[in-house]
Length: 267
Image (cartoon, rainbow, N blue to C red; front, side, top):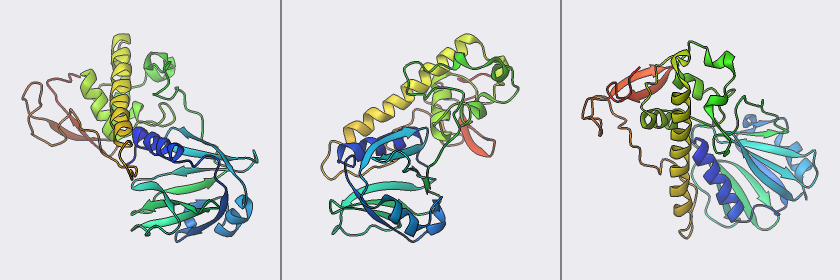
C-alpha cells in the first residue's frame, strides 16, 4: 500500500518529468464512481485548456492546482494505485482506470488493480493535529496533553491520520522497532524521552526510504515503484529478530497486522 514515502516519491517523479506547466485536455475513466465531486464530462469541461501550476503532497494526497485558483483536485492512491506520465502513443498498462489527457501529447495514467484510489475535485482534507513528519519541526513531544493521556496504543496513535499525517502500517512498525518501543504501549505511559526517540526514528525511517527512491529515479524510463525499502524489522511471525535472535511476534492493532520483538521492544 502506498504510504508517505511512496506518495512523496510519486510527486517528485511527476515534478521531475514536467507535469507542472502542462495543460489539461480531458479525462477518460472506466471507474467514474471513483471521481468525486464531478462527473467525467464535468471534469473535462472544467479543466479543459487549463495549465497545472503546482503539485504538492498533503499526508497521502497529491494535490494538483491550476492557473484558476478555484479549480484543483487531489489524487489518493488507495491501496494499490500508482501514477505514470506517458506519451499518448505509449502502450496502455494493465489496470489503468483513469487517464488525464494533456495537450502536450502526454497522459497522466492512474493505475489501480483494486480500484480504491480516487480523484477528488476541490478536496479539503481535515487539518491534522501535528505537522507533516517530513517537516523539520515535527516532534511527537508537541502532542496536546489530551492525546498524551490517552490509553490507546502508541501504534494506533501514530497511524491516526487526524493526529499524525501520512504514516501507514509498515512504517509505523519499522519506526517503533527502531525506537525500541512496543506497539502495544499505552500512550499515557510514554515519557518525553520516548516521544523524542520515536520522533527521530520516524524521521530516519521515512528519509531512508526517500533516499532510496531518489536514487532509483535516476535510472532511465523510471516509473514510481513501491516497497523498495528493505525493512530492518522481520515481517514474519517466529522469525529471528536480527538484534537479539528471539522470535518475532505477530498481532493485530485496530485490525492491522503488527510485527514486533517483545524482547527488544518492552511495553
